[in-house]
Structures are given as structure tokens and as C-alpha cells.
Length: 145
Image (tube, rainbow, N blue to C red; front, side):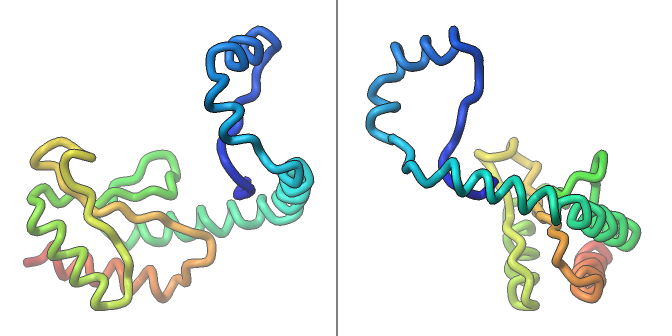
């Protein structure tokens, strides 16, 4: 919920196991007492704004996918991979996009298998349709080379 750290929820058996076998982790990273209050506010904010934001995000994903043949998304995922293949080409396309105002990183080995370098876009509900149109046009120029 954007508040802090990682959380594990579970039954008593899981909690007892983690307390007994993960003691250095538990006692070295104790959460601040403020976190439950912040989480309550984050959940309230999500209930008030989340459904609309999800709708906006899906609209942007559909818009981008309809304009970008290079995008290959599955199930409305906000993470959109653009397959490149060659590391140098992926870096080159990433740098060109950055020069045009888009911070799109190249994902290369060892993060992905050799020969499968790609760009990874993360769609957000506040991206403008105009910017998505510009980005898809830049990617189309790259694909046509």
C-alpha cells in the first residue's frame, strides 16, 4: 500500500515459526508504530479512489496496445514488455526514448535470458493519451528500421 517494508500475514503456526527461526530479521527491522495508522489511511484512500484509477489504467493499456504492435501484454497487465533481442539495440532504443522524454529502461541479461533483451514499460493511470501516442509512434519508427 505504499507505506513501508514487507509484511507477512498468516496463521499462528506460521508466525511462531518465523519468530523462532527469523529472529535476527525480526529484531533488526522492527516496524514503526505509525505503520498501522498509515496502512488504515492507505486502505481508505484505495477504497475511495482505487476503482476509478483501475478503470483509467485499463483505458490507457488498451489505448497503448491498440497503437503499438511491438507491445505484447497479457490480461491487461500494466507491465508491458517490448521484445528487442539484442542488448545493444535495446540500449540504443532506450537511450533514444530518453532523449525524447521517456524513461524506459532496457532489461538485459542476467535479468532475462541471453538474446531476449527488452524494454519494460510500466503503465500508470496518470499517463496522458497524448504521451502514449508519442511513445507508440517512436516505437513504430524503431520497428520500421
